Image 1 (tube, rainbow, N blue to C red):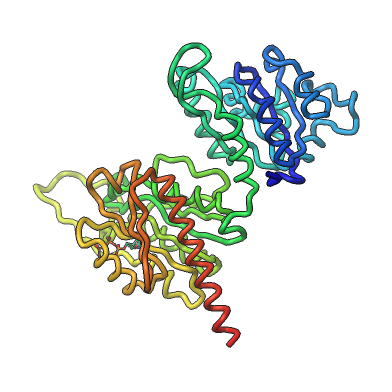
Image 2 (cartoon, rainbow, N blue to C red):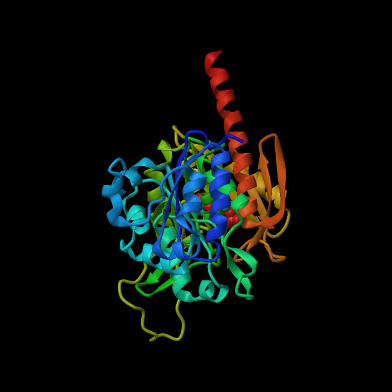
Length: 408
Ligand code: CTP
């Protein structure tokens, strides 16, 4: 495999028992064609000798901030500029915490701060440390800042504990690196996506909403980003960090979501409407908190505009994909929506039976004018990957049909 040909990778090694596995990871990346240089933190040197990495990489191993003068050809800023990717494996809890907080008290942290290139970390720590809310917070924070977090794996640990916290195996890490560089099926395409619920205000403290968790939409955003698309995610309020590398536009109400989509839709190649948009809003939301003076209260609701239908009706419309959540007659209702909203594709799911809203798994019937495909029940991440494959395939086909008819 030479899929990493001409790639320059800076491998950061921090202190942990998994540090010895970094040697194998280095070897695998080199075998795939990459040029790898190694930076170690002071505590990593307690586990593995720099000489090991020096012998394997064929380059000196960088360890101190202040030893740049010894190799003036490459000081720390140059090193940060030199690489196409900075991957830290293993990344200890301590390193993750410091990186999250923006510390720069060792060379590796300094490089992470100074690099414009993608940074990835492969966490490796005791399961209890991984489960600690401080670690969870730090990892979520890194993801929000666009750092790729690969792993960890679950299983037996060096300390005898069992649980999540093991570093991903070197082969698995190599796959992540290869995938990061691979030109994906949506490479160079611009993709707009809505996700999550909307909140329709009743008064300044109350709202009408629904049970959408946003998990499916966020998984699609991540899959599309990994497939090479430039992704803009217009999201209602959810408790999820946006996937690394995705532009997030946070909105609350359906009308804010409508505006966010309509100002961007015409410039997009693909639009996927995954949000559970409230169909109605309160006609006159109260300016001040409503007091419980009356025995009963009537709210008048008015229909919200259909964002997907509006994007699809644009003269310069993107390839439009809708969602349909049904409890019965899934295909019939979904086909009706496909036609009514003039969509290119619709992904229909049967809600209930542990699938769909708030669940971690999903299954989809994906339909288009003259065909369809089923995505069997799987994790939302897996379903998202398969959906993106289908979208890429149908989109490319639609594009070549348009080009053919333009040539005629
Ligand atoms: N949608 C939208 N804007 C709205 C309502 C829905 O963009 N105001 C999008 C959703 O994101 C989804 C699809 O349209 O992609 C769902 O269509 P919809 O007709 O709302 O489905 P249901 O709510 O299931 O409709 P119905 O009550 O007709 O079954």
